[in-house]
Length: 207
Length: 207
Length: 207
Image (cartoon, rainbow over the protein chains, first blue to last red):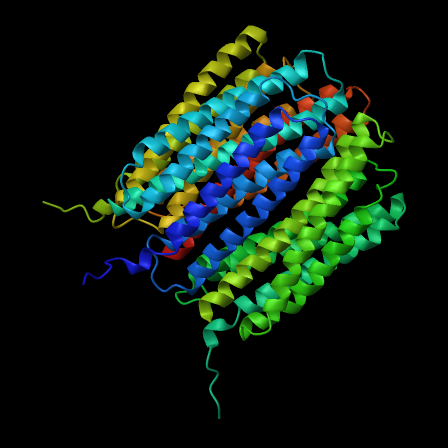
């Protein structure tokens, strides 16, 4: 009979993996949004809300486990930060979809598709990375790549702002609506980077 | 003669209770704002600024006590977070009132009254909850209810945004001004939830 | 032969001093921006981007050192917070310059020069203060003065918003662009205050 060496590590890892899988689901809904008509968008917003609620439950489970555990697999503050930033990603993605529906956006400006593709790539990498927290191996590539993606998202975002404000195709009210949406998508990209930085921090401390 | 068992708990509890009472004062000023004319608003803004200064003093007293105490009644990070988020609530409420005066808002859009009523209810619950940190009892209702209120605030906020942008009653500059005000009120609601989450975290650790 | 008494303090202090010096460079670029023509602005934005990259490297070096050090000169959370908030200052200053170029701003509204002068003064004080973290002496003046500067920045910022929205000189799209720039400069002022509060927290704990 072999004893499990690290019972204390159970729970948190599964919850972080679940949160990241849920985010991947959300980022695929963003991709679907790009080609959807008005009716399709409503239905995507509904599924996004469900994903966001599932994310809230996972976040809450992490906090509960954190507060009731005497021993944790990594620093308490890192666990807290990781859960909070994963939750932020989901919130921002849900907000973006909801705003598209709420503001009855006709057409998303060129560049939003690139923002969403970057988010989708970051979501894939994050979902692949979370299970590696168990062994703390093969995570360097992940955080370097997510940092690179965030820089890319930042450039796309600033080009989008310049496009909205200076090409003369939009009136002021349209600019406001679209700016809010592209800003929220940029916040999602930032939150992916913060997740990656927290993972880096966890790994370096253990090494 | 009985000895007080937990002398270390004095100070912080009184400061958090004072911060929450001050927030309740602020939320009542928001309610007053709803029916006030231009002159009344100026006077409310003045009293709000005074409340915000009082809040700053309390926050600073918590930080000072935290930094100079060797033993604290709960986790240092939780104390820091609780004080910082209580301070945020007051700042957002003060900012909202100041913007109404600064932008010479004629009429607040329908729905702002609901935002303010939710904030007022959250302030009442928070002021009732703080004294319970001493015994850590009877706090579950509080944080569940504040989380529910924040969800309600979120729905009211999004309906307000849809109203501002899509009903055609406002020009772009008016939308910008009003949006900033309703966004700040929503940030206050978020901060109440973060206070409640921190309280939950403190209680679960102790249980 | 004398032994160095506090070898553990090396590294972090030099990194924080480097971050603050870099911020001072950034704030001087903001001052240069005030009098620059379109071509000059592009060149200033380029140098600002370089400063921001240098800042990123310093922040990353702090995190790396923090995660790989068993003993640190102050609380780990304070080190993390100090590095993160210094990084924020640089990011906000870089963003402000980039937006001026991106939005092809013709003329900055009166009051932006005061915002930038306040930031420059805060940068000077921060750069002077960082080397004092080694001895923890002569820092009281610094954080009191930076808090005073932030209050001043706040007043300038609100006056600027009132000017943009109520003097009738700007159309809605111009207001949006200029508001984003003055908001980012205000965020930089807030971040200076958060750096000062973190320094206060470090010093009080050690006293």
